[in-house]
Image 1 (spheres, chains in turn green, red):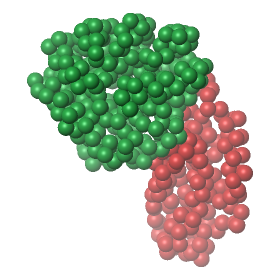
Image 2 (cartoon, helix red, strand yellow):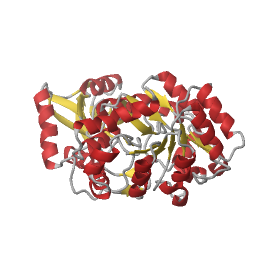
Image 3 (cartoon, rainbow over the protein chains, first blue to last red):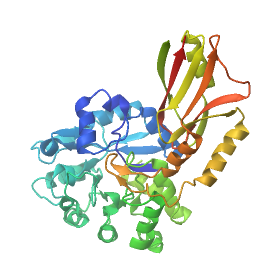
Image 4 (spheres, chains in turn blue, purple):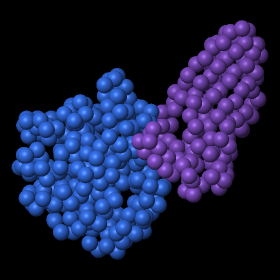
Length: 280
Length: 143
């Protein structure tokens, strides 16, 4: 199984010795849980049955004055363990952001781009700020994961993260694989519409905003969408993501498995769709 | 009177786990140079516990089996809500409640430099929401 959505923001070896980074994790990313050794992250993957995890940083230098892990931090973790797949983040407000992305992929060996329009304060369809990044990502054939829908940071605005803003991108960059993160919750049907319509749009499951994980996943998969729709129409378009450490990975795996999807569909969601996107 | 406090950290490896910490406590007592007094053991978490029982794997299984019956993992818990100080939902009410049921501490007398513990007694650190890096403290008091 592959977890397409994790943030290694509580890894003690990285964050523990960096006061500014810890402050960013606490004050900007709004994560208050205790730091844990890298070993805990790997054990969390083990008990969930996850073989590989995508690590996501966020560069919000212009808007927040910090990076919630740098590309170099992500590379460091990937070098520690080959179960990690590192994505890059660049600040769309920086003039040299496209060059930074190019460097992160070609030189640092990162495998995709993470954007967080809420923290980075840009609209995903902003032609001036975001399109140059999509150009590069499209040329380099890397997937782009975009935070959409609600976020936990009370210091960000939802208006930047509406899933339908991704439509322009999907339309203008048909060869760019785009992952709408967090189901775009609560705009799940908007996200589904894009995933149905555009072959290059995918959705990740990294959403847990109410109730227990199983209850929430059941609500999304059986009330907001429907299990039959997932089975018939979305089986190749949904990727498993946990959003660890906002939730333990195993609890999200259990929640997805608990929806009653068939084994074939679960295999696609929990592994094969991500393998295809990551080319592994 | 001597007072010695030591924090011991352990990496739990499973969602639920019973870890025998008796040898670590005995060692701390022996190294404290306290001849007569007592030792307190306190878990520094609210989703893990400390318990004393016979050191048998069947009993370890029974602890978790019965606790799960009393406090199932999935239940109608008020704790399943957004906790802004954590940046996530509180979805481990069962672990907190199990911790309350088992308790989070134990104490033993010390006599002639050794902990007074029977051959049947084992001190367990009980993980209810792992794997996590956990800490308990051991305080030795005496002369």
